Length: 94
Image (cartoon, rainbow, N blue to C red):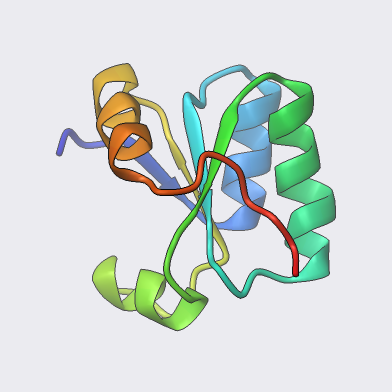
């Protein structure tokens, strides 16, 4: 994975979405209502695909961090690979 290909965290993802630098957003399966309102809504409004990832604790562990609610993928090829593997193209709240 190239350096800078992934933006970790709600704030960073929101900023990158506003700058049109995100090709795909992944949110934790247990993401908060705030993440839904701040990240998912913005991504959909910008036409960026949103996929549902593992729970926040697992997503963070895989990235070597604490719990992670959202991440943004900036590299188009990497985003295409993740989007193609995902079983759900959109995050949906239960």
